[in-house]
Length: 292
Length: 302
Image 1 (tube, rainbow over the protein chains, first blue to last red):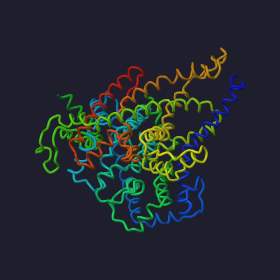
Image 2 (image 1 turned 90 degrees about the vertical axis):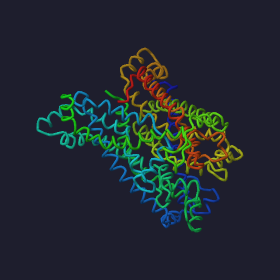
Image 3 (image 1 turned 60 degrees about the vertical axis):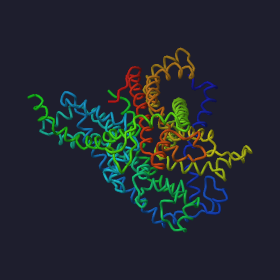
Image 4 (image 1 turned 180 degrees about the vertical axis):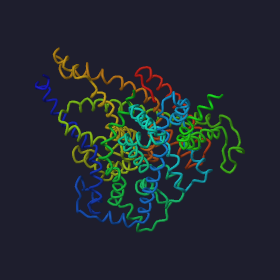
């Protein structure tokens, strides 16, 4: 019984301590930023804030909400996230369902699979993609942020692997009852796959919310920056060159507490859905990794 | 011919379901691949692909002629290899240590905390790191000074420290998430094996070495092999959000170099050539990696 030996007990205590310290280190940076965002301007400038606000105030949040550029970016982010997730999920659910059919019933399945997988292995890269968006005249439109991301082959494969674990008997029963292809999908596959669909929807939501680079290169008009791009250029890099901004807002934006508040608001939606996400993603990943 | 027609009659709804995905793949993934021809041209936006001048391999030649771009290739390799090695060792060790925690509540709380950073973007984490590592009163430098009496360290302004920050912060973001597959493989070990080892008098350390690790080996081999495809991916999002001209000599990598060549200098064709150089090598490595992973771990993508 190794549990009872002195050596193992000593190890066990140190192991617990180590793991607790490591896991706290993972989120303490976030706690620090939160503390700074709730602190007074003077305390933050004097660098005396650690993990708890000093001179508690909501001033930085008030200033953030007063900034029309920030609110605009926030709304645009919500818009692209909702639209992008709706379109993206529709595309991969339909394709994933069709590709989950057996090779005998669907001969061209393998051709399609290689066609899609190839897009994960090789890409034209930054410049050809940018020139394509320019030539399609999608610059400065929401479609530049939504369409290129609409097909996530990785998520599609996760989903189709899940569809394949559904017992054939369920489907046969539906077919005997006279259900066609679409009916089977809506009344058998989708309801049974709710956990997988929820996980992948949340992954897609987070992906759109966090996406910043497309906004940076495809949006010439800075008032159409999604929040992640706004945070990247204006808040973190402090690059005001592309924006017309009044001096008052500029001063506010460079204030440390206001910066921290904006960074925290940027992270907030992810923090809110994280508990739901965590409930499912472990299953989803293991399912994707372990196949029949 | 007749059976082919019969097949279409039966499967057209399936083709229809895949149609949106097919169109997006063609327009946004395959058309840009055709756009790679500009790597062999002096592409001018106002002339287009048809009228721009063909220059053959000129841009690929200059890639290896400039000291700057050769340095960028080295930086990419050094940074990504450091990340791959640490990104393998840290999650495996943590998974083994976490496996020793018996209380499910503690175990789950630890998991909740360490998975979180994976879901935050490098914009957020970069913003946090720039604040934490600031030379003027960032909390990390303050602690180093108060506890050890050290001079402030220029984490994001000194090339070597910058690489160090890249590796450590990459572990911070990803080690928890990377641990999941290892925890799953540990959970799959037959308890009878441990009981047998116990009867033979094996200590916990010996059980870990002779039972747990061999059970994890297949998945470790698969993950390690698949990383081969990433040796030219040093992490664009992370570096772009943390770097500055002071650390270009040690922190500039292929992807950031391509971005600046294209979007800042407007040198489209050269940037495309550098990007293509990376894509082609990565493609070959990924194919090799999948073949190896299939051979050693029986791993398939679909």
